[in-house]
Image (tube, rainbow over all chains, first blue to last red; front, side):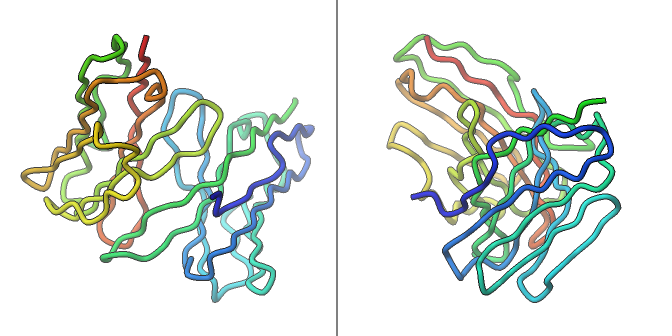
Length: 114
Length: 112
């Protein structure tokens, strides 16, 4: 059972565009929602994360919008650059024992053309 | 080291062979996770350690998979009698309690 649904599967934008990646979840026990960026041959790296008590969080060019009632959250990348071309994963965590197991979406492959 | 280190980076195993994958977490990190990432998919949780205690192994796909962290630092993921469906990237992540999880580069396992 996929607990975090991510869309689209792939996305192509021009430099300067604003790609938006969406995720939806079902389990209301989730309390931490990070986004990870992964380049080929590398492990995922945390970009930005949000807790359910906040509707929006911005760090640099990356913004998370969170809609608790709809159980949806999205990543916006402002002024996208070719170096942002990577696969992006949303995730959600279930609290356990003081640390947080992550449930990932299937990923979105972003291509930013020059 | 500065980050999570995994070895080997690549492993080719013949079907039926046993393999052992190693993870060196960031020094002082209490929590350690193993994930499996199939080609074109998101990582999927396998198991979680807090220090040397394995608190959750609900994601291990079969009893052929075994993980340990005997001294609360280095961890080993062992797969016995490998099958083709075990081919994937195995990722290790560590964190200090409820902070950001740092991932290693992974071990790409190919079973032929």
